[in-house]
Image (tube, rainbow, N blue to C red):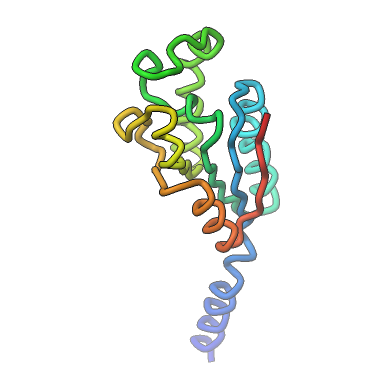
Length: 155
């Protein structure tokens, strides 16, 4: 009888495991550093803390396209963004903080491969924690079909 009860509890836990996880996909197109910091860097931390206080998980994915490519390059000096003085001034710290989002908070970063070409970027130019996907539309469709809530981060 004990074994049956334990098996029932385990099965019940597995069936309701998804109830313990919230999911969000950010549609990141902004080229604005302040907006990136507010909505992604600070916002993810605050939202993760909120869900953790309720004993839930928050899975976060970020689909990168539009003006946001520049935040995820390895070296600005080898890209079309090298003359963006505002970005150059903050990029060292910004780069560390974004890497921390991937490592510490398990944020999944997905970059539109089509737009990379328009921005003269190749896979070797992109930081290692970013996964390149065929295009942003496919990434957003896939994440929403997996149950992720959609939040745009635009200019």
